[in-house]
Amino acid sequence: MKRAGKGGRDRPGKEADTSQCQTGLVVATHGRHVVVEDTEGQRLICHPRGKKSEAVVGDRVQWQHTLDGGDEGVIVAVEERRSLLYRQDEWRSKSFAANLDQLLMWIAVEPVFSEAQLTRALIAAESAGIPATIVLNKIDLPGAPTARERLAPYKAMGYRVVELSLKKETEAARAQVGPLLQGKATLVLGPSGAGKSTLINTLLPHARAEVGEISQALNSGKHTTTSSLWYWLDDSRSSAVIDSPGFQEFGMHHIPPTELARWMPDIAKHMNDCRFHNCTHRQEPGCAVQAAVERGEVSPIRLSLYTALYDELSQPRW
Image (cartoon, rainbow, N blue to C red):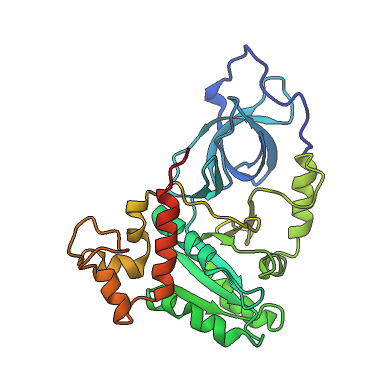
C-alpha cells in the first residue's frame, strides 16, 4: 500500500467515469484519507469526491482510480448501510463502524468499569439494531465477585456475559471468544486498560505491523489511529474484528430523551404498563418502572442511570 500523496485526488474540472467503478471495503480512515480494500484483498488510499468524507470503517463503497493514472483512488459513492454505530455530543458525531453484525463490549475487573459508559454503549447498539455481548476480562483478580454482581442486571435482561482471563489463561480465553466472532463483523469497544489490545494481538499476531503499515500510508506518523481499524480473522475474509480506540465520553445526543427507555430492555419491559402514556419514569404517579424497582425487578442503579441520561438529553443545546 502506497503512502498518501498530495496529488492523489481527482483534479478539479474532470468528471470521473462511473462506468469504471469497483466495489471496495473501507478498512481505515484518517481525515480525508480512506483506506479501501478491493475485491482481491489489495488496499489503496482513496479520497472522497466532495469536501467532506462520508465513508466510515465497514462501509462498502464504489471507487475508481484517479484520472491522472496514479496509484490512488476516488470514492464515488457509499453504498447503503445496514447498521451504523456512532456517538454524538452537542457539537459533532463520531462514527465507530458501519455494517456490523455485533458489538463486543470489552470491560475488565480492573480498571473498574464505568457502568454509565457501558449503559451508553449498549443503548447506542440497541438503537442501531446491533446485538451486543459483554466480555468481562481479568476475572482472576480479587475484584471479580463485585464486577460479576454489577453485571447481574445485564444478564437478567438478556445480555450474554462472557467471563475470561485473557492474559492468565490465553488459550481458554481464545476458545471462548473465537466462536463468538466466526462469520461476523464484530466491533470491539471498551475503555483503555481493559485488555482490548491484548485481544487483538492474541487473535492477530500481525496486527501491530498492519497498524504501522496503515499509519505510514496515511502519513499519520504514529502506530496508533483515532479511527477504527478493520482486521480479517481468516483467509476467506468471512470473519472480522473492528478495533476502535478507547473512549472517555459517549455522547447520546442522537437519541431523543423520550425514546431513551425503549432502548433499555429492563425499563422497556415495564414502560407500557405506566398509568400515563407519556410517563418519563421519574416522578409521575402510577409509574410501572418505579414500581418494578420497588419490587426488585429493576436495579435502582439502572433507573438512576436512566434518569441522569434523560436529564442530560433534555438540556437545551444552545
